[in-house]
Image 1: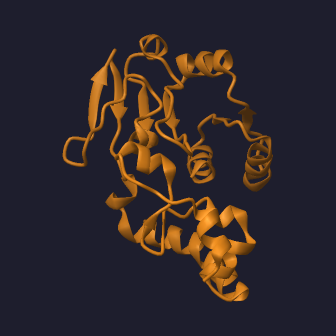
Image 2: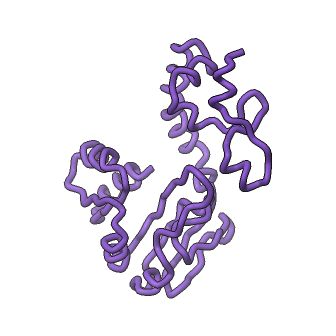
Image 3: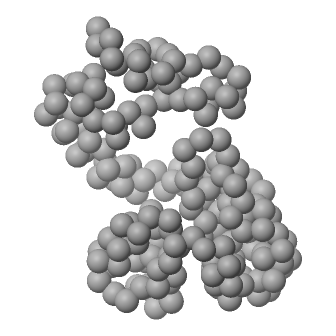
Length: 197
């Protein structure tokens, strides 16, 4: 997602700055865009300084367990320029700005400290055809790899990175974060596939 947002913004002539904790992802982004692009690891001081100067800030953090910790405190949002915009794509998981509140497609924005906040969950549902095309580009290679390994069970057994995306397996919840959030029982996926029946 960051690559497409950065590509669109640079295409419109914007000065784009991308923060991530994965150096490999930052290098790949620079290479894929083919332009000079400011990138940095998630250093809180540097991030907050850049946010204070930004016209538009897009927060798109993902967390493996539980809720996203606020990356941007309210005190930083309060110092942003009047009329600047925050787009919190992570609102589905609680948001990465302390000032974020869930909005909807019918009432998508609100203002706090004269900063416009857009915090609509599942933004892709607004553009279903585009989202379907993007998801197809992601899932087609995955489905091809599954077929090459002889099915879902075999690919899960052979590839740990596939297991990270499984929430339900053979009718049982396998994601501990969701189980904790909704006070449900779950089974360890690694133990289930080790049996291989």
